[in-house]
Length: 234
Image 1 (cartoon, one colour):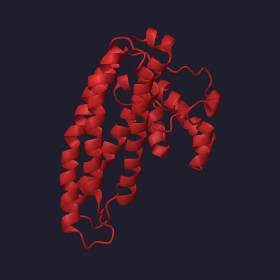
Image 2: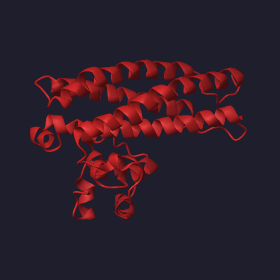
Image 3: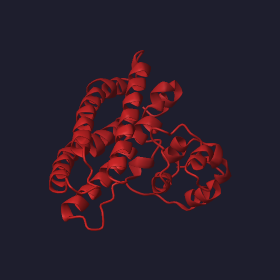
Image 4: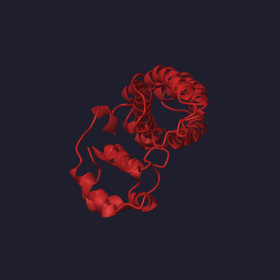
């Protein structure tokens, strides 16, 4: 499935492309905090330097990595209709099902531990804002962008995709804000079960949203900003 004949080529490739074509790469990047969704256009060498990582060590991990998760996550040649349906059912529906639960947990933690110096004060408002943004964003994709893609594209699709990319950047900024408030989704040692459950749920949500944005930014969208690629994967 990989398009890289020699792993030595990886340093100069973008992390988005690597994650889209090399099985197991997304997991390696998540382990090291490499942004391969909103920051997918940076080369692996640049991404490693930004995180103070040894690029050769990362390349060794990528060479040893194997498939992880649903095969659809890594199949660059999956038909667009199948990929869109996967995104809608695996990510859109699940995000909007999980966010209200996370908001309720965050409310309980903020109320019960308001005098704790490390309580994630403001998390409820941040998650509620993200939920409102994602609800509108996903509706625009499902009602406008995805049908346009299924119809083969169109003269307005480049602008529509550019707007979705900007909103993805906003989602990424929200994830960063959540991480700052929650100390990278880590509960204190003496945390109650609710606080721990909140951090576990936030980590799952974070990882899902990162993969969701990656699939759109680095796999689906390029098919419709490059005519030949779109034709090949219709």
